[in-house]
Image (tube, rainbow, N blue to C red; front, side):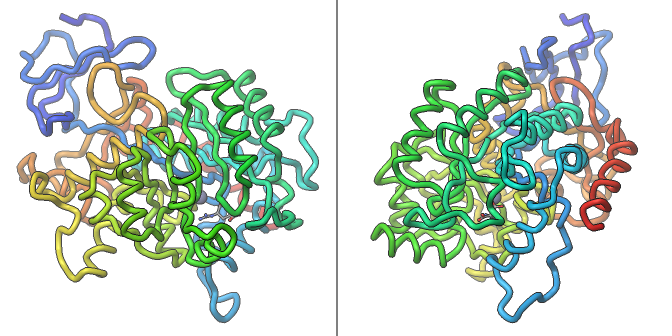
Length: 463
Ligand code: NGQ
Ligand code: ZN
């Protein structure tokens, strides 16, 4: 029986096999679970959880700096505002961000993520260079700031430095307002190596790469990037924005004769290491082929709604065995419950049905979506997370059993309440990462100073 401090007893915990009673969790000093035992006797001297436990949710897509503009693009700048006019505004922010501001914004954002129950984040990081587009003396300066912000906040991270080369299909020259993003495969791989030397991998930190999109990289440079990645980090995650806008699908068709998802699946060995972010516009054949590939579809429903992207055919894709995960992307919302709820509601509104993303074997839609997002998010992160089971990271949420959404309900109804009920604050009382409590009674340990620094950074950007 465990006698050291690395153990916790929970009357209820959501395990891979569902809600279980009297669960003993044990973990090692590296923050990895070593045993998860249901129906355990109450061990003497072991702390008891203050509520039901569930795994922390992975966030599979983030651009941290964009947190600073959430809510600032909700007015009509021109008739026919769309994704591309939003992007012009966003580039103005990207053009001004400094290393110190990025670190402050990211630290506060990651605290918000933790409070919302995201315990890990894949950072799709593409602002690399100084304001004028020249390299920083430390080439990975900005990436390092983001990695440091994550470790200060206590969130797990998969850092994905982004390759951005062109402004459109056919190797179109980058625009002046993209100058801070631009690399060759070689310079990006060097940046990755520099970053890894400065901030080596550990239990809460992993690396991969992200070719930005098919419009921003060429076929040969994507091959060079993947070859170089495999020389450094064989099998590490690869994320790409794939088919977010119909305009980009049309341009891909014009340039290559194929739709983006079909083209990628035809030309690259897309497998479990890949995450296709915003696979929004897929036809039936693409949805089936993507589902069969083992890649994760990275869905960001609140951002996709905010930017007017479209609706992913989730029912067909999930029924074909496709993997999904969720991300907060532009951070218009930082709440995985909102992502899952909107994912389901988009289908309900489009199909005029209810409980669309449930299945015959998983009739409870919230449990099916939570399980899918835990598994897909973990796969996309390339880290051992997403489940309360031995060998995974000791990342969990303690739900508030006295919250009006949960109080008096049976365990089998808890996740439905967590995902679908919107009554006041989230029913998340505590958040633990690597076995350590980082949010207690709904508050992060560094909340006040991190917020003050964030506020100052955002004021400086608007001045
Ligand atoms: C991004 N946003 O990487 O932040 C993109 C726009 C671009 C989304 N894809 C930037 N939602 O296309 O260069
Ligand atoms: Zn994105």
